[in-house]
Image (cartoon, protein in one colour):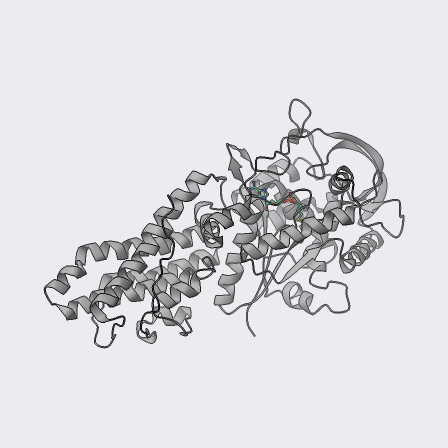
Length: 509
Ligand code: ME8
């Protein structure tokens, strides 16, 4: 039985165009999914759109369209972006899909029947942009939402509540005491800010607007957008539906590694309310929730509501999908907030993709062509011991980092190997060996580099998906099926004559 991996991104609101922040989470998920594919896992990668709620209703009204008309165009633009960024998702869920709506109604009924939901009244300050009732420390001194910086609405309405207060101990002693939420420091944040002060029951229906899933028991209520949204992670797999084979395989099976990704502003929903909903439904918890930092633009969160966004399509058109995937994977580690500006992007591209990797491949290829007519015969080679060991060690460090979802560290391992190869070339000066006609040593040097480039290329496969085939052809590995075992077992790969040479990752000025 192959090992299984289920990875999800948040489902994004189509209340505006997606920006680099959304591309960030989705690319991280895509890189991890592709890595697990390379490791022989059976994978399922879910993304989608969160289409109900007051915010969407308002946006559609402003545009003079019905919500569905408004959504069609936006959702199409999501899919266009994911295609351009080479996102290999297995399924795209829309919360307006009928199977989802029907299952959410069933989930509501189960929770009501089991006594986890009760009827009452709610009064509180609501942030439409975050689709969330706020508590005092989420509100600034001007009575605005600290996250979206928008005005709040005083809401007073009939509502159904989920008895989250029943789960205080479950949160303290199980969920937030386990390895579930990463990075670890976020567990204390959740405990201290939301769980320990008092876990208040969560309002899970709204009556003051209608764009949502009506509950069959009382149709003037629509399901609160977060209960609707969070359950997408299981409805998409067929939970409570006639074909639930994916649900059995990718959720129910305790051996499936489930990784959920979310930005830090919604960790609260994913690490508190979502585990409680799952527990109430008697379902297993995800293996991990990776809560990542924000991409900032001039020190504030890049966001649709603030309008300070960078369009990923523009970046892809200018620099290619791989350049953006690389920047996201390497320069924006998940543990902290990061910056995104054109200058930083170009600087990083030139330093790592053009100068380190691109240049290493091109100078090595030139030497292989010039000194060996495009083909280095790898019999009787004395590989450089130190660089060979570094290559093999790079693979194991990379695997360790990727297994811990530390993509940036894993890429750093590859870049370090690239730097070591470039340094080795400077030290060995193959051009002098050629001048001295020391062809056996020249062959040892070039073969050592060529093998290490093969390692680097393979490790870059989940990241540089657009250029991977070209890189493989450039280094003479066309039609060679690579695996992790093969690349560390040096004698198992044989190279062909080099393919057509073209420059990959040309410097940007
Ligand atoms: O919250 N930096 O949707 P959303 C990093 N529909 N990541 C960012 C970001 C930034 N500046 N801006 C957005 C919602 N993101 C709900 C989710 S899930 C059941 C429902 C990413 O359109 C990040 O993943 O506001 C963040 O959590 C998500 O987009 C918010 O997207």
